[in-house]
Image (cartoon, rainbow, N blue to C red):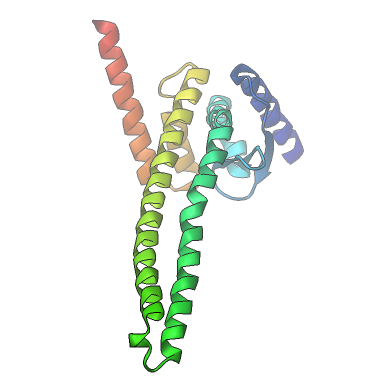
Length: 206
């Protein structure tokens, strides 16, 4: 049953990927919740529970959402690299600060040593800057992640031919795996889709 289900999902992904003009991601079933696209391995992992419980339209929309992420694989991989260097800088700064502190502790009169004082000041300043960079990077990563979810939602809705398709899927996933409780991000995505649909309908009526 699991193999047959996976093959069915793979066939659906192949068809959606053909519309998106990308190489189809490989589908696998997992025991964890929800569904995820992995840009590094170009795979889509789908919860066994969702695969067996969602109806055909909901499964199609869910897979289209993940293919929507796969469309932007190159961008996602570039961003991973840009997120890496601030934490790396923080590690370097930590090593510098530790070395400076060790040097300071080893010299009773180090307070009069210009080199030690300079190392301590530079280490402290660099630590503050690195902390700020790491915080900004974290905010940027969360903002970028949310924007990618919205893009994938729009792609899924277009493929499903229904502007509310992802809204139905998010509610279904919450009902199946979270006791009907929508997460904060899911609520924001649903509100965004509703507002976008309202604006589109208003423009069409003019």
